[in-house]
Image 1 (cartoon, rainbow, N blue to C red):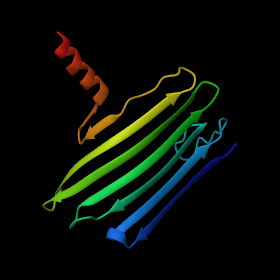
Image 2: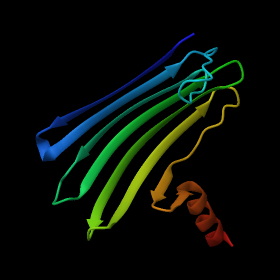
Image 3: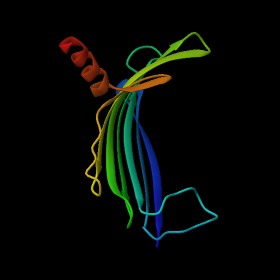
Image 4: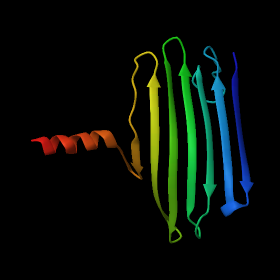
Length: 138
């Protein structure tokens, strides 16, 4: 029964960029009451690239792969993200981003839909589009 974890960041010259990588995995029967918070049977891998395209603005591209596998749960989720962060003055930032999430549950065969994210609000686009199209049918 094991827990594995790692993080790595590498700066590069193009647009003052930085690449970040992280990985965490625990075996299904792992138990460590005094260690870091972790779920048995889970695995998370994440990679991102952060660039400075204009002035102090930050542009980030990221991909996350999450998997959970135990006797009760067998699912996975992939998230592809893009985010723009623009400083406004010294104490405020404006942030906008888009997350595409793909969720699959092998036990229930459930699947998810894309999520659109704005700071302080998250909504499912397919539900909004469906309601708009239903309103046109009346």
